[in-house]
Length: 264
Image 1 (tube, rainbow, N blue to C red):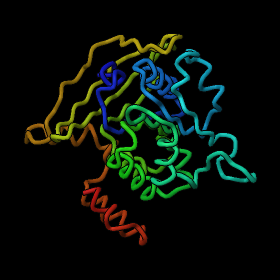
Image 2: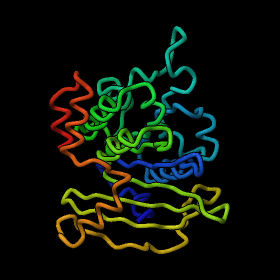
Image 3: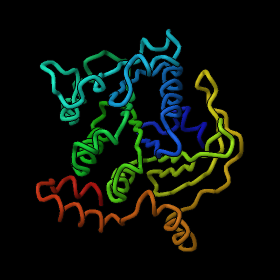
């Protein structure tokens, strides 16, 4: 499943790479950027955690012509007089302006590095609302975000992952150059597919899958699979839609009702 996602099979979707202190997902994020550039896609990166130079270091020079880096690394909180991009600008209007400022033949891919930086300074309901609006607005073809799951409360992680069409959780392996990808993918029909794949990343950012998927797809509509799906997805989607709506609306008095309805 990982190669399919790298090939852009999740068009129009929202993909989250979820990592922790024990296993970084940034190298995999770079692989997704590299794969998109190889498909001649235009890629916009909101860079909060690394500089433009560091991001481009492993990418081929000719490919970076279609890479548009929005510098939120230098001054993410706007402490200087002329910040390039700040966390407080994370909203539909500003992001749409950034993406459409450059001319593309088709909608671009938006990469957020990282969602954790934003979640530390913007409330989860506002972040979720912006992501939902971006998904529906048509300004971007797809969204890819890096999320450090161990930096946030479980409810915040679950709320963001609830919006995602695909979640890749990376975990370390005994072999230093290998990692485990736990993948959850949801289709518009409601089908949930989960796989676990051992992979490595070459110097040119090519992803090599070392083993075949170990799980088959499960349909939420099948009664015999509902309990299995619930157990295996509880970390990604810990609350039901109804409970999440109730929780968000009760704790965030200013959240718009339209946003809460979108989570149902």
